[in-house]
Image 1 (tube, rainbow, N blue to C red):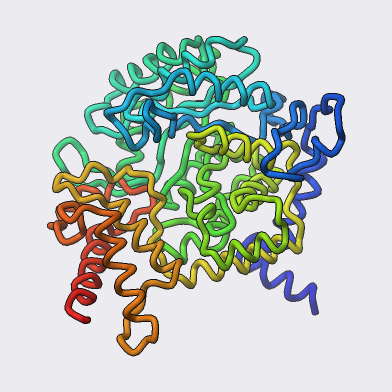
Image 2: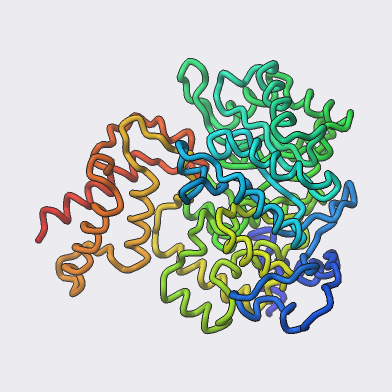
Length: 486
């Protein structure tokens, strides 16, 4: 009976829980863990205390099947670099990158075994590659792998000449002769062309990478050694993902890796939350069929899985008092054997240290823990929050609306139980005040949802393909309802 149920689940989804957990054992076998330095054994135990210093020499590594390189399971995402005065360069375009802090954190990461650093010409308002190059130039080239992207989002850069210049500039900014991992950035997202016409995900993909001959040129750069591994990052239209893998199968293009969104919420619920997204279960299974290693983005879903509702935190702490909430998501993302590295954007040293503790070494998710996280995911889906990762790709709004802050406040109120629709609810007055007062404190009134005119400029920039104007109007209607009712 149990085997019948297993077969039915597999036929329906392509990979069930048992299949997912098979990779836990394989992950251990496929993993290289460098022997730890001498010292107290207890100090080298994973997550004995989140206040402890991460151990040196205990990082988990995965092998690149093509190059046989050992890649750290923790990849340093350089998209949220610290800036002077605090905060990150992703949010503060007017603040200078704190290069001294970037250098210190990169040094600390390398000392503790991190060897993959992921950046893009688009990160930190175009400043990430430059800062990354300065930090890494101080180390031997053999000590690190660089991952960057062909981020030709603006239609003015879709020409072959302009895209080539972007690649050459990446090498210059990073101060290297070659990149280890180069990807076509955000394949599947819609975009506006130079005339303002909105292209579908497939149309935009072909205009950016195929019709201009760019992918053929990048293949030639791989052949002459300036790119060691060529891949793509995927968002949005599943037809684009499927087409790229079809071309891989046919030999038209060979992809050495693919960057996908994978976490315990997106594993089965990405499409449920947003019909235009694709479940990580499907993406990972398709890559596994072809032995294409996966790089993982959004292990915390834009921070959402590090800021789960308090009652969920209590459940996690009851099971593992010493581990952080974030560590559950990172362990989950790193468990599948086909994952080469999990990219994490780390602004602060404490984030880096916590992730190092999780992966030094990785303790794969057990079957019991996977069942537990499935339950957490089911509960989170039931909360009906807006699938906003606070990535700020939608910003700036031409009318000054702080879109991410509005969505963050709305989701926070749902998670805290402060979104109620009936005046008959015994908590109505308390929840109403918490929502309205918190809204004014979180978002200045001139930047609130009621100023949205529905221009749709933000929609094509959203990796989650949220209908942003519709959500803003829905939130504004709710706010007006609360204001009318006392």
